[in-house]
Length: 213
Image (cartoon, rainbow, N blue to C red):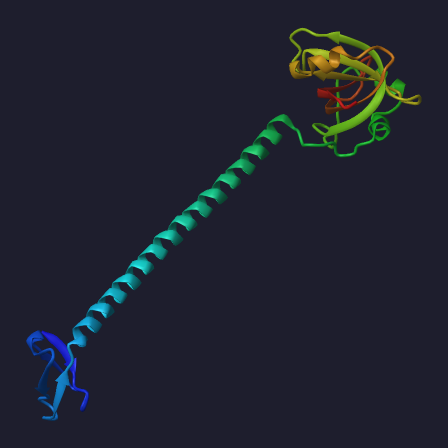
């Protein structure tokens, strides 16, 4: 059966498809009108349009969900990457660059030569421990060390005149080539992490050293 609206009174009635192309009478207004055969084509087209619209809505819904999931996963991955980076930085006490701590400011914080000679235990202020510094000095000695927790190679630097202590920097295996090219008397810039300040006859100690020039 077809739901047909009377063109005269707009009453909707159900009519058999057999009456397409024929004259029919409205049960409401009793008027006769011609039921076009094109009605069935229109109904079919309307059904096709409706189905296409439903398909488009479903497709857009799926696409939106995939995009949302992708962005959510992407944000989660970035957040996880940053969290791992922070953990690694915290574990090794490292940042990408130095924090600008001047050598002489650091050195003066631990007193004169006499103060350091009278102190028999390593010490470093909480404000200094673990900080990354970039300093420069004259190479006094280059040597390898055995079973040292700070590194396998070592360079002893003398800072500019006026410093009350020298600096010993430990390097890991990945810096072996750069350390091997260093000669006594060279003036070099270097980077490292503060481990302890000078005491007794011991220098200021840096670990995870890197030659910068």
